[in-house]
Image (cartoon, rainbow, N blue to C red):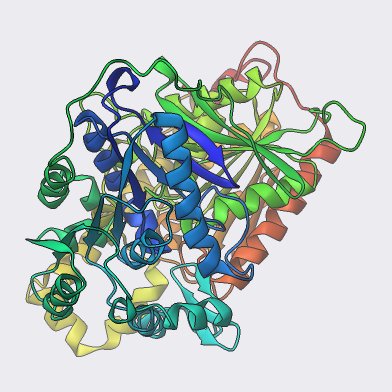
Length: 605
């Protein structure tokens, strides 16, 4: 697969083998917002499956979404999204030499694909509608309901206001919502394609009506069940499983295609280094790591007028995956943060660790796992990629599992001069876990449970071996045992100079502080991850509060993933202050490696 840029859109071309077989190509029109984040890895696998079947496939980010230029609050979003589909079709024809194009749309993408199909010069050969929203009005109503039902912290602003609908970290403006309400399959003046495949959920009442409507317009309609829809949309990890529905759709798209002809030698070469220019920034996709299997987007300040290049003496920022979400970040936060930093003269690289997003799978490990020990190798490969671009030092930023990987990368690599850790769910890395497993084992701070100990229902649950109560009780007892073990290790170290517990997180931070690494440790007020902090250093941060080069901060009214705009803005401001402090302090190199120059008892191995 090859990254590319066209008409301000970022995309991937999944070319058929040897750039041949190009009779029919496919453009994938993805879903909106959080659904696009959830299905990203599955959408990528689907594109690879189509290319393997001899169908060159282009998947892309709509204008103002993903890695593409623009923002979700720009005017005319609906028109821009449909224009993006047109541009994708034209680009696929030009780069892959296909004679005909099929469109595949998922959820809102299905509605957009149908709207775009009739306006595409020459039309489209086929259209696959996967769990389509029956109308734009129905989609807006669904999004509004989900936003109102969201479990947000107390004191947060309402999710539905005059400024729009905030759902999953994305904002649908009133202008875009109003434009969407006019979009409806029922108002189609003609068939969007001669062949249409409709794959919908078994309980969908709208599917039969839509199939009947399309047949009345003259389309040859095939219908397929979509039994794995709920699995696909429920989480990033579950969406990595092979989709039987996608397999059937791939077979249908390949029906009636003329066998591949001779090699298409006249095709223009694909650009070696596509560039996307946005106000104040220039972005380039990078492939790096073993066999180029890791992926990231380098975002650098746009050169000033008359300047050949920007100075690179400030540390760059390495943005790691937020949990298992791909490199654009939860609610697209990594993209907006990268471009905001570029406007301030700071370069960044947002990356996918192995098995996530657009990076290759890790040998012998399922995709979508987080808190993996070997992710540190991938993060260090990203530091190598930054260094190859002239950025010799970096500040590593991570949220959730990304925070744990950032911490261990700082411990392992002297090029890291700073870190910003947000809501780390665990500090210790292992063989990997799913988000569901991490959530299922999370235990909040002891203070969160103390008021409930006075309730008789709590004791009935404990004595009755209620699973949740038992898990919490077990977690609290394990936490107490860990604290005793760590304290014993510190006592041994004070007497002998060695013997720290290998999971002594406070010792890690002490080592980094003395090495000159500046740390920003941020938690959402009341977040469940404060229980992990308490488990290792105490509810109030214990010894971390007085350590050199370490700042702790709490963000009130914030959810775990910083999906709420005020919380996201507060973190961005904290990070900018942190980066300014690092730049003002200047480099603090440690000669000869990560531990040289420090007392032997502080070395971390």
